[in-house]
Image 1 (tube, helix red, strand yellow):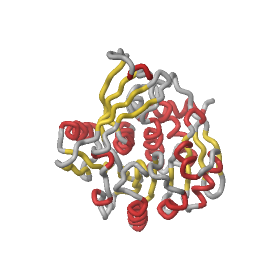
Image 2 (cartoon, rainbow, N blue to C red):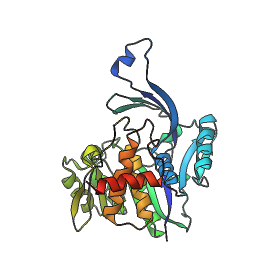
Image 3 (cartoon, rainbow, N blue to C red):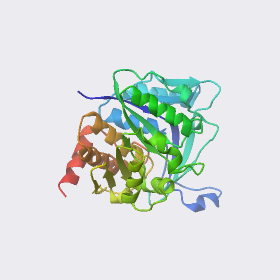
Image 4 (cartoon, rainbow, N blue to C red):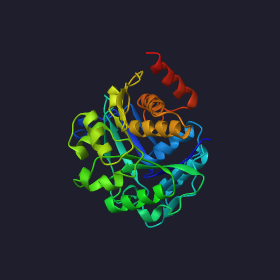
Length: 315
């Protein structure tokens, strides 16, 4: 039986400008090929990927009672994302990010630290996770100051006591957090998805293999280090191996690629696929993600994702 999934984390609107080179700041008027608006935020991206693949994920997030919040709620209703655990707060503004995408697909963000993206706290997350949910994923450790290390320890412990599979992605640490400081929280995690740069900051190791060993030593059950064009390195307590990337037609925009990878992994995990199969399907979703402008625009549906996965297997 397929497992239901809850994603916890941020939901924002992204305003994307491509290409936006450094001269945008020295020019009174700058012409871009593409300016568009799309949904964004780590948790909403993962949930959107799952919905496009045919799942009906639960999203736990915080929004303002404003036009941006309504736009996100309508997106969720339209795509089949469950909104029961979305909290709207009239005192806050829904987060809006401006994403400046360079010609090579690299991007820079303009964010509002007072928006909902940085305000999600443990008080917004249900103490009792619905029984039908088998997998819970924190879309990014270190995003919200209100979800600090003590709060993550409490949250992760609570989730595991309820018998759920616990997954977590992360972003770059914000306050010099060390691996030792977060080791208790990490000890509850079944699947961890950092990228290589995020892992390097926390573990003080450069190689993916060494980073994975550090996380496993904290008690993490499975580690997946996202390494961009190289693919990913996956390890558990028995072995580690590289899963090579699947080639893309063209790298247009890397916004949301890691979230699409995580969403793909969660989808495969919920279908009881093996660790290696989950990583391969995640690579396929990450490959599709970078071919279009916008965090999840490259993911069309399950058929396309499975085709991309098969193309990688035939190499």
